[in-house]
Length: 365
Image (cartoon, rainbow, N blue to C red; front, side, top):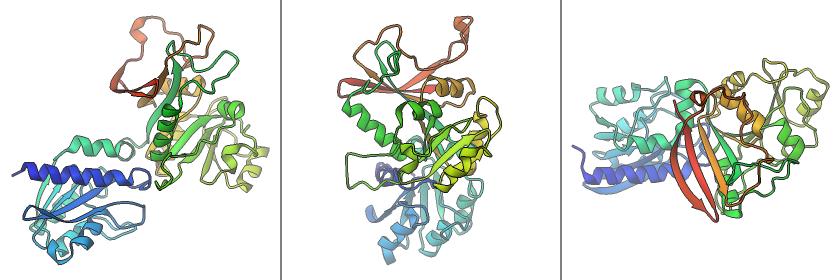
């Protein structure tokens, strides 16, 4: 029977899981609370890929008191051997009597198998407590496991009338400091920051995550450039910064390819001529274990992703000013013949950052 105290323990486990928001990639963010006779005896969370899982950290802190306890875990305990041993074995060996998990692990190596192993060992298992909140922690991981591609978010900084830049390209800065700081939080939680070659040539961006909290540990996202004709300058800022850089092109044998590889850039060839096959790009990034992608680009790439059905969320920062009819727009796409062809979104969240508004919208369907 689920009690209010049980829900409080799971809420705490979710809070712990959030501590790995910027560091667990490509693994899911998971938290665990051990409770016995109403009291918490151990807590843990997954911090780094290759490091101890949440359950093992909690069991270590619970020690001998773990026997007969209940474990509240935000994701089904793993049952396969990866970089660490199966967590179901650790829970069984520790004498845990009851496991409450928010949801099943979508990884086909685990999904349901962890629950089965626990039940076969006589452990009581309950699934589904605060599942929606747990799902929100790992949307990219779930997308990769169930759809074979990462979750794709596009960031757009616009004026109130929808302009992303002046006609000549000037765009720094459309939004204020608070909104720009929030962007770095999104970058930090992402597996990769994606841009197009046009943005690289025009702005020479860094695309790394720079948080306002200097003590917050961040695993830097990879910088991913869509560059069909391999035009990226070897001296581009994003190439020289620490972290992985991947360039997708339709001609990996180009003269520029070896120069880039010598600088540590991964050059990946995909189908296409004038444009890279974006579905193939996403498939390859899933193979490379990318969970969440954060797109910062111009109307060309955003429009191509939209038309290909590869955008999942829009994170739009709206500044309180107007740029006029000649300003650049958000999406370059084929003209619509009728309103029936318009693209619908569902608003998920609206809040204020300084003078700017941030709207999170999911693509309908």
